[in-house]
Image (cartoon, rainbow over all chains, first blue to last red; front, top):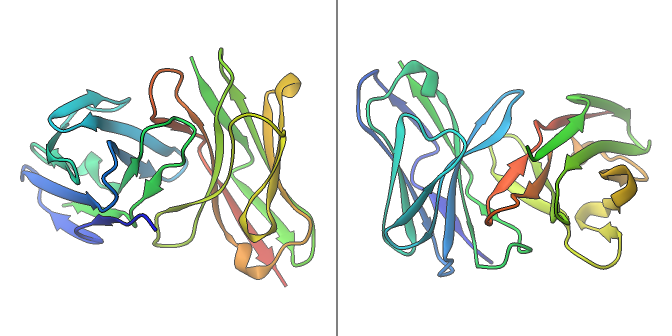
Length: 113
Length: 113
């Protein structure tokens, strides 16, 4: 079974801090994604990566950046955290073909105070 | 713009009753469609997917969905609800360009005894 692991389940940070959310997958998947989940809005795509050092903006990239230095790891960075970035963050990965389902981590619930 | 619409943010049924969760999509190309389930404090788990071929798709836990191109729908059903089905359900479609998903806003299913 594919395992997508997010480093923290719960995280509390302060406004203005630089925040790192880490995601690791163990199946050598090429594509990795970061989504943000908010009540009543579903999941929205922040960034995705289809290869090492490659990244593409999703629908809501403002205030975020990403890093993919190794194939198995995809990091989401909040450059200067703000209270409106309080949310649940979900990482996912997929092995190539668009007909394959994405595999999700358990999520990181981030609170910015 | 491509979209996925879930009708009803909250559905309540009695144990043993039919479950029907509605999903409509808009796409200019043949869609790849998914239903995911999310239990509290967990990531998303794949229920079923439609890619090509048979329009009635069977998934895990007794759920199934029917792809109807003429109605641009992919509704999720289960003949008899169980208490353990209480969760949030998301319909998703692969974006027309790439492998990322576009999600509906989710439907919370409550099951009463």
